Image (cartoon, rainbow, N blue to C red; front, side):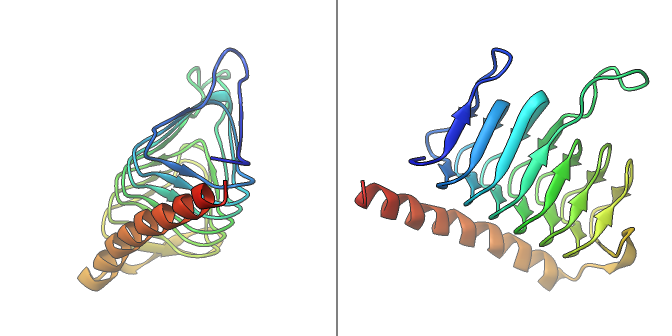
Length: 184
């Protein structure tokens, strides 16, 4: 976590599992929890200043991604925390805001997930897609476009590829953490 910034706000400080990797240039603010072997890559911003962000084991948040949450307000007294399960893949430059990503969900490069959305396990939001507020992608489906719509069911090969991507990023995080430690 050398050269990453962890900032407290409102009495809340990010809590990072010792086996997680947070790359240089990442900024984590406030009420955030990272699970074991989760990885937050270069120049990501995670802002848990107005609600909480939870990220499960082995989930990877790739370079340049922004994760935020939504404040409580009339009509949504709990606001919209951002809850991300285990074994989730979030592609480079994604925007994830006030939503629920179940275990094994996939968010493609540059995709946007808005408040109140839900992506179930083994479901995929394609690169560049925008999932508008309060939409849900059921397990086994691929959605694409702006706004995102159902495209097709995922094949077993698609799902296996997502799981292989999780394992790849866990190993890649180990290599980057070792390189950072060696350069210390």
